[in-house]
Length: 257
Image 1 (cartoon, one colour):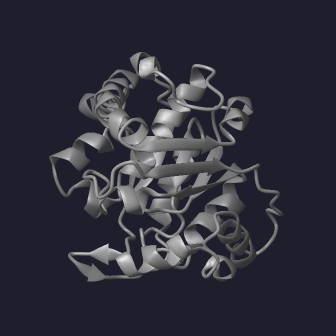
Image 2 (cartoon, one colour; image 1 turned 45 degrees about the vertical axis):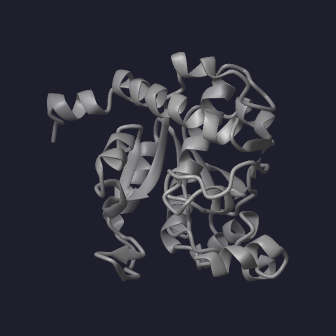
């Protein structure tokens, strides 16, 4: 089924680039001036192919995490290796990026609807629906959206699907890895829950150190079970049980929610 001209226009590089510029220039001071952004492993990203790369990360706010990734990816496309620097990269951003987000979240207000134009892959299978906790099973339509996106993009996903630390991961992430065999880059973020509110749009504490660490690509046996692949991912993003009591900020984060 062919997309309408309006659907194609909304997904065009022009629209994505415009949204990146608007969101990017508004968010830059909060990420890199009001707070301090430390990026580790940024130099590794410049060597990655421009498609079939899956970034798996822990999750601390609805929007600030993803916005930071978009800043970093755009900066990398301008050959930045260790920090964002002056955000001139937003004048011609790298837009071959998609991110997985809950449909309910992306339809909640005009800000989220605007940000969805930056490349949201909306999925219905959420941990919350109409204010109630829900844990639905695997929705194959969700995984197909992500698999299609991987064919020509980098894709960001949060296996836990919630900002609650140490929540179990979803098998859908492992299923995608097993079936589509992407390069999987684990990412560990910290400080966002302390600096921002849950949506990531308002400050809680200024002057916070925000940390983003890109690890080496995972060595994955794609023939392994989805359970084992998911366990590997959760270890890599430091959200498995063995990491639960290792950091004081993790415990504070848990009570803060």
